[in-house]
Amino acid sequence: MRRQRRYWLGVLGGCLGLLLLAVPYGQAHKVKHTPAELKAFQEVFLEQVRLGDLLFHGDAETERQLGVRLSRTGMACAMCHPFASDTHPHEFPKFQEQMQEFATLREMINWCIENPNEGERIDPNSPAMKALEAYIYWSNRGSKLDPGRH
Ligand code: HEC
Image (cartoon, rainbow, N blue to C red; front, side, top):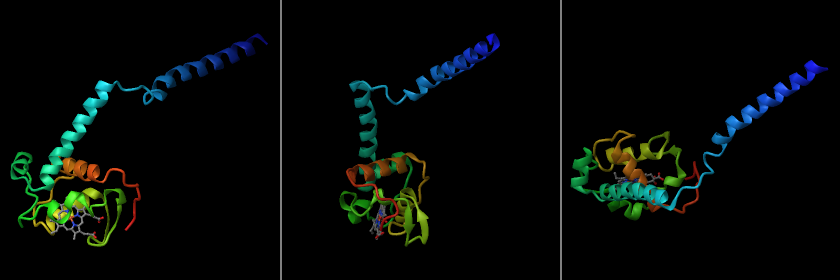
């Protein structure tokens, strides 16, 4: 009888211990950010949008700074995609007819750099790619996520 009670107390203790361990992780996303933090996050994001906007419009100085050559035809992304129209970031990933492949947005950005633009494809994880992605997503904000759509 005595041993049994000790056993159950041990089990209870173990459970409480696990619960205490789990609480800080479970709450990680529930901690509210301060207005100052939110403003700082937004500024980081908008800085990327601004950079991407410059690249999208063929700004030579920004290309030089980031070490990329997005076009050799004199055509900037924005000439065919004004305000990032027809870039459809919310539809990726999807089967891409031009590539005959299942593709991500980044792969399609590189397709446009190499094909209509005759430029040099960029590292998918490069600052230039992140900035282009930020600008394209920002320009299409509010679009409903619809992966795989044509
Ligand atoms: C000469 C015109 C032209 C230029 C310049 C151009 N594109 Fe495109 N882009 C196209 C065409 C054509 C397509 C294929 C449209 C389709 O899929 O229906 C396309 C498709 C895309 C798509 C995929 C859209 C989809 O839903 O399949 C993305 C993303 C894109 N372009 C980004 C860019 C970026 C970034 C640049 C600049 C580096 C750029 N494009 C420059 C003509 C152009």
